[in-house]
Length: 307
Length: 266
Ligand SMILES: Nc1ncnc2c1ncn2[C@@H]1O[C@H](COP(=O)(O)OP(=O)(O)OP(=O)(O)O)[C@@H](O)[C@H]1O
Ligand SMILES: [Mg+2]
Image 1 (cartoon, each protein chain N blue to C red):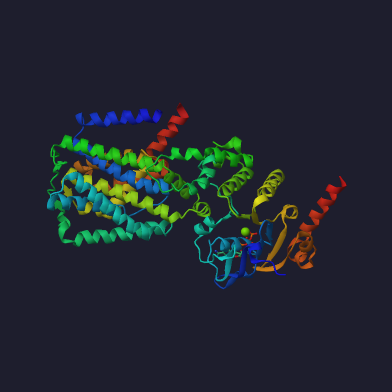
Image 2: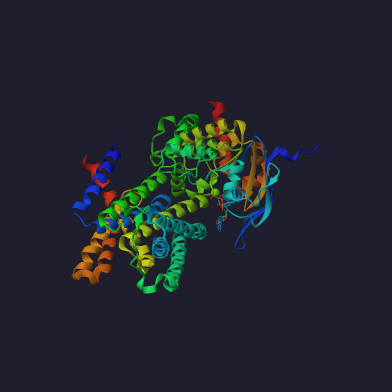
C-alpha cells in the first residue's frame, strides 16, 4: 500500500510538472526513462547485459518516422507498427543471442546492433547523416492534434505509464518468477525442466518491443529520427542510466534517465559541452565505485538505516 | 529366466566421456533398479559428477547410450530429460538464494501449471500453489521457514530445501550429488533420514562419500575408479572386495565397521 501511495504521488508530480518545466524536456526524460526500464527488464531481472539496445530504440524511431512522413497512418498506429518492428527485430536478435552467456551475449548484441546501424546509414529512406527531419506528429486517433507540446507531453506520459505498468507486471508475473529463478541459478532452473533459453528469449522480445516503443514516441516528440538513436553510444548510455539509477529496481532506471538527460541538457548548453563524454565517464566511474546499487538502492539503504 | 528390461528404470550402455584426450567416464554400463537407493561411490575425480552430468545431458556423451524406462534419451535436452522425471541436485547447493523458501518450492510446482510464459498476469495466481508448497516444506521440516530468504538458511536446511524442491516435480528418478557433503554430524543424520523417507515411492541414485550413510541407505552400490566401474553389489559385497579397500575405502570402511560395533556394544 505504501508503494501505491508513492506511485500516486509520482503520478501527481508528473501531471503538474509541465507548469514548472518545459514539456518537451519532460517528454524526452520519459522516453529515455521507458527505454532504460525496458533495458533493465533484461539486465536487472533476467541477468542479461545487452550492448545493442540502440538498435531497437532506433528501429522504433525510423519505422514510426517513415510511416508518419509517407503514409496516412495516425500517430498511435505508427507507434504500434514501430513497436512491432522492434519486437520482430528483437525476436531475431534474441534467438541468436540468448544461447550465449555473459560477455559473449553482450558481444553478439553489439555486433548485431552495429549491422543495424550500418543498414540505417546506407538505406535510402533514412536520409543517412541528416536523418528523417520534420516528422509530423499528426492527430491522435485523427482527432487530437499533437502539435501542441503540452498535449504531446500528456500523450507521452500515458504511453510511459502503460509501458511502465507492463514492465512492473512482467516482473511480478508467473513468467517473472521463472525469470528470477533463472537469474538466480540457471542450472537449477534447467534441472527443474525449464527451457531457460525460451524464457530469456521472451524477456528479450518484450524488452526490445518496449525499447522500440520508447524510440517511436521519441521520434514524434522531436519530429526527428536520426542515427544518434542507433549509434552504439546510445546502447552505452542506457546502461549508464540504469546503473546510475539502480539496476534491478523497477523505478531506478527512471531516476537514472532523468539524471543523465538533465545533465546532458545542462552541459550541452554551457561551455562544458565539449567535455560531456568525459564528465559522463567520470559519473559512471564514481557510481560503479561508490554506490553500486544506484540512486534507488542508496535511498533504500538510507531508509533502512534511518527509519 | 532373464529379468524384463523394464525392471531397470535407468540404464547406460558403454557410456563414455572424453575431455581433450582424457577419459573421465570410461565405458560405463550402469543399471539402476526401480525402487532402489543406488549409491555411486569412488575416490575424488573418479568421474561421479561427470556421470550425473551425462545422465542429465549437462554434458554431451562422447559415445554410448542412456535408456530411461527403456526409451533412448541420449539425444534429449537437459530440460526435456527433467520433464521426463529425472531430476538432479548439484554437488554445490542448488537453491534460488534470493527467493523465499516458499518461492523456491513454488517454482518447481509452477511448471506444470502451464502459466510460466504468462507475463501479463499477476503472480498472485501462484498463491493457489502455496498450500501444496507448505506441505512439501513440512515433509522436510522447513514449514517454519516458508518466508525466510533462502540465503539465510543453514547449509543443512538448504539441502533439505533442495530435496523439497526436487520432490515438488514428482521425479521418478532423483539424482543426488553428495547430499551430505560438508555437513555436521546432526545434519547428516537429518538428511539421510530424509532421503530414506522420500525413497519410499521412487528411485534414487546418489553420489555419497560418507560410507556410514551409504551403508545405511544403499540397496546397491557401484564403485567407480578412474572413470570405469570397479565393482558392484550390496554394501557387504563391495566393502569386502580387496580391490575396493585398496582403491578407496581402506580405513574409512574400517571406521564404519568400528562404529557399528560400538553401536552394538552400547
Ligand atoms: N568440463 C570438464 N573439462 C575437463 N575435465 C573435466 C571436466 N569435468 C570434469 N573433468 C575431470 O574429470 C574427472 C572426473 O571429475 P568428476 O567431477 O566427475 O569427479 P567426481 O568423481 O565427481 O569427484 P569428486 O568426488 O571430487 O566430486 C576429473 O579429473 C576432472 O578434473
Ligand atoms: Mg563430484
